[in-house]
Length: 406
Image: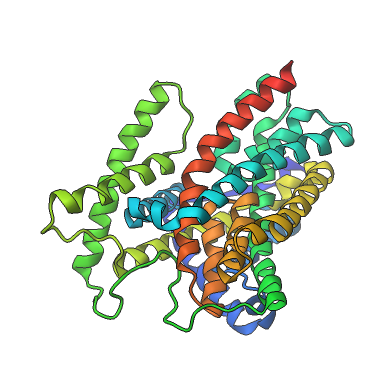
């Protein structure tokens, strides 16, 4: 389509936020009506978000209307979500996770290398520079949009034309695929190995305690928001300090760390203070932030912008998807114990290996809603995916770029 004939319509942040809520409810309705979506554990915000993205594609291709959503609110929801994960974490979780946590960490670090090798080899195989394959590897997939944007100047400096557009497009396609493969992978493993969760009240999203005793009130929600905002302020200050020191780390990571520190110090320093960790109110805010973040992320995708890169990018993503699925089925599931927890973790790993940690949590939540709780999975995967991955991925990317430059 001729760009000069396109009418650009900007949807400001408040309206985009409101549309995101509508899109989420559309996804809920579609999942209730379409058996396939429920059977294959497709998350509700993914269903609604993809449906909305197809509508925006129709408006663009059929009527020349390009919708641009302002996403400041969505980005805040991401910070809210990871801060809530941090508030819910305890240092004892690291000990409780024990061997599974260490195993998942090693597997994740190994897969980062696998993803970059597949990306570089795939790019060179079709006559493209290895740097482009690296950009379409862990920089955009396991790293997500934030890492792709942050590293785009480095790739551009090494001769990758349109590095930002390529990175964002790869991350966008990866997010779509990640949203769709986690549920089917878990379904396959659960059916093949006759797995099932424990017969108890389902815990979805982040875990909480005393669910029968606690009553959600406006004051409990306000306490959660106050704790989240306190952690975000500290995390933002730490983020600014790291930027000045020359470190590249997403804001949500520093907020996650600040929240972990607060949750493991404040209750001990002030034992009479009602700290809102492991509460239903915190779980509610977390689930709300996660669902709306995903709905807004997917509904705002400009699918037409990927068309120019469709051929090579689709091929590289197909290779990466195949590598991820084989790694999950043949390596991760077996080494994580070949049980129900491992199946849920497999769905989550598919979510963040090609997409983002919120996608991973959404995939696992969709599985546990149907098959039963997997509390350990919700403890160890966020710890690995939200913190360790970003730090390690940065080291691997810099090392790989240096090797390719030689």
